[in-house]
Amino acid sequence: MTDTTDIGEASDFALPQLYKHHVFSCYTQRPPGHPRGSCGASGAQPLWDRLGKAIETQGLAEIGFTASGCLGFCKAGPLMVVYPEGVWYRPTTPEDIDEIVESHFKQGKRVDRLVMVLTRR
Amino acid sequence: MTDTTDIGEASDFALPQLYKHHVFSCYTQRPPGHPRGSCGASGAQPLWDRLGKAIETQGLAEIGFTASGCLGFCKAGPLMVVYPEGVWYRPTTPEDIDEIVESHFKQGKRVDRLVMVLTRR
Image 1: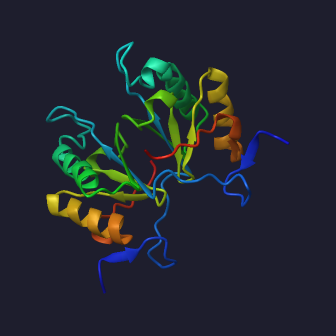
Image 2 (image 1 turned 180 degrees about the vertical axis):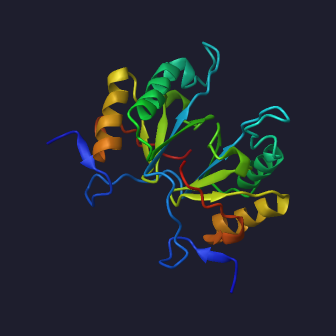
């Protein structure tokens, strides 16, 4: 016996998942004109507030919502990432948020027009 | 044609993954004696700083590391979660951090003794 388990190995040790989808939304705010930019400077906060409120008021208990620090890719913001599927979104309007909630979180259908495909530097 | 894709459906639209593992570590700090407690009050910050530094100095480019706000379950902290596998850890010592880096991130073996299995309220 060891105290480690191969990740992803089918076994009795598979862990239950806390959330069906877990969203992380970047709340980083840099000052206007900062060379790196930031999700906050790109108007993120009211979008994330709308997202968090929609999850709460619609009783979507299987969706986790967590504020995050910088996710990198600052000029691509506002950025959020949804796990376990690893989908990165760049919503810019309240309607975009509502569509992610309705399509991705409630119907299980990714919203391709809002997806960002990012590459590590 | 629609602009949505079934999540997880095998298709040409499967997205590349940015990270092999993406870690979110809770940096929430509430004052000493606060009734909810917090990861910060449980000594999280030096652990996460060690984790971030290990990922950087060991050149683990496939590991994403992001500071997060409150992950819930405040009394269970210090808490971190690793996606896409959805493993929640509660490390309390520098040695715990080193073991997670070596075992989970470098060898792909979950460290069962540090896993927290959480249930939604």
